[in-house]
Image (cartoon, rainbow, N blue to C red; front, side):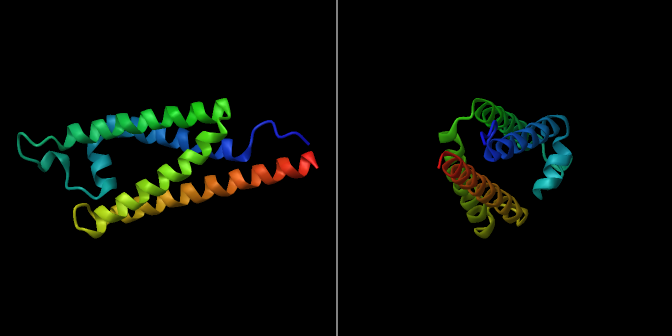
Length: 138
């Protein structure tokens, strides 16, 4: 049995599509994005505060990551799947550290959990794909 698209590829593509939607949402509605992140409303900020700009930059970075995920899945870059596990794990650690140190709202703990869940799912499906290919070759 030949696997035309590894399960990990579908997971990466789904996460990439979700990131694309969230990045676009963040560009359209910085207030909504701020609420989701546990920040004070953007409109309540003083002149010269660049929170809305930083939220827009974050959204652009999210769109960039989404494109990488979608290309990685489309091209079946197996090394990319492994890289995402490490990158998501590191991001989760950083988000948790920011929340626990008080430098970010406690909602960042949920974001850390999201990153780690993604890393586990990608890692597990990559393992499953390798196992399935080994059994198919035997």
